[in-house]
Length: 113
Length: 109
Image (cartoon, rainbow over all chains, first blue to last red):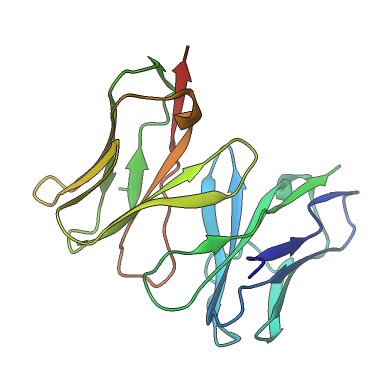
């Protein structure tokens, strides 16, 4: 398996623009997680899905953030409109059951100018 | 109190040294945990899983002290390649993993 695949790897956008991050989890994994990492706040959970259903979105910072998982092999995290404080590395991770190793994608480094 | 707290470091140690990090957690019911390793500008990767009081894997030893609610990671005979950030992940009872902010280790020649 190729592992968790994220795209794009890098994104630079202007404030106010819409940003869409993409993730393909490992095949057969029922859980998908979106994390954000910054120097100040570390690795924070934004939202996670189980069997394509959002379970906990309490970490989503604002209404500007939304996430979807239309099928078992694809998820998106959208920021609209983007702001400079959204600049961070966004990781997607997946695993196949509760409290097991989560496998991370290589992340998307987002810069909002 | 934060769910997970770690000393950010950096810990600067010479090659061959033994170094230990601690991680404190707030959920007294935690009985298992992970240590993840994250290299600079890379994704976190699992280093060790612990489902009881401790685990040992080569130069790495992880222990859980339930009474004091801390987790430790001991690295013996440090290598240059051990330079990374180490993230502890106690089982907080939530299905999603809750990561500490990490401890940075720099092994020097």
